[in-house]
Length: 258
Ligand SMILES: Cc1cc2nc3c(=O)[nH]c(=O)nc-3n(C[C@H](O)[C@H](O)[C@H](O)COP(=O)(O)O)c2cc1C
Image 1 (cartoon, rainbow, N blue to C red):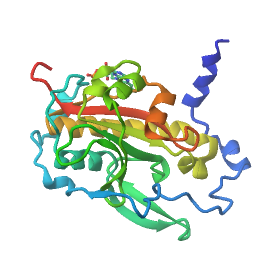
Image 2: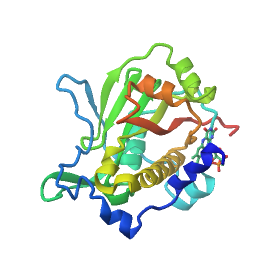
Image 3: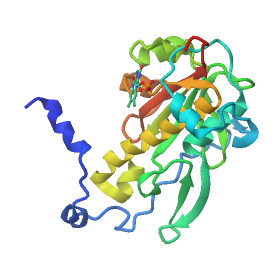
């Protein structure tokens, strides 16, 4: 059997009644859940984002956005605005409600996207190259605070992005690139080995909202799953074990010809 055939098991549901009960999850064992998002260091440079609705969508009609959504890979050299970025971050991971849960041992967030068990296992990282008023660099989105946390600068980011996406140079050309990094324990804490399929399904919802949000702003994006795991994780300084990228998408202003 070809070795990748075993990967098919990941695509199947393992929420079988016996399996589900015979090995208790960390949640059932009373272990505290991991925090909703990574810690913000006390000396971090934080940029408060404008409200998600501070930008007027160019195409407010949902059916129009669904109809015209397509993968767009050609971007102009124009910047995008902080208001546009705020809207796209909110559409992809924005928090609508926070509740105390698990017998007050943790917090659950309800967001603009669904997530199995409301575990929301992703951190959003951005490679900012050309966003008005934001210095280029790698940022993390705090969904709880709706703010950007500056992490570090990267030299020659265009070349590194292109190399990290196996030569897809439009990633390096984009004014901003979204990366969704999974913290797998977010799902495993509740659903053990059954969580992994669900977390990948979650990522699809996130990226679809980016497509639709970008379309409504007359911006363009494309989902990217063909990338070098080691190069992308190294670019964002992720450990590749407890946190690693599962999906990414460049966003830019579209060329008229697209
Ligand atoms: C999971 C997934 C991974 C994808 N990965 C890539 C990619 O690495 N590079 C790329 O150019 N397009 C990628 N795409 C975009 C598809 O090629 C695109 O959705 C498809 O050709 C249909 O075109 P449309 O989105 O314009 O309808 C990906 C799409 C999905 C859903």
